[in-house]
Length: 96
Image 1 (spheres, rainbow, N blue to C red):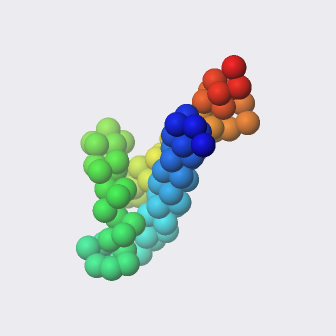
Image 2 (cartoon, rainbow, N blue to C red):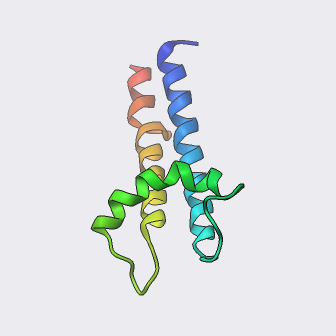
């Protein structure tokens, strides 16, 4: 396996896992009384919180609902498609 293929595989795994974690984070917002510092919830909160904090300063809650996890799902999904999709930039660069 070449270094480029390994990098694409690792990027794909990272973007997939982060999308998955943010989807779980959206579900956790439905239960505001959960303690995100306790297992197993902290396994979802700790990797996602560094992404959410800066975006929360830009995007305020809408109607009391924090939409920043939804925005990150969109960002990670878009990045995965643009870089690794069938016609993604990295896939096309490897074919050259």
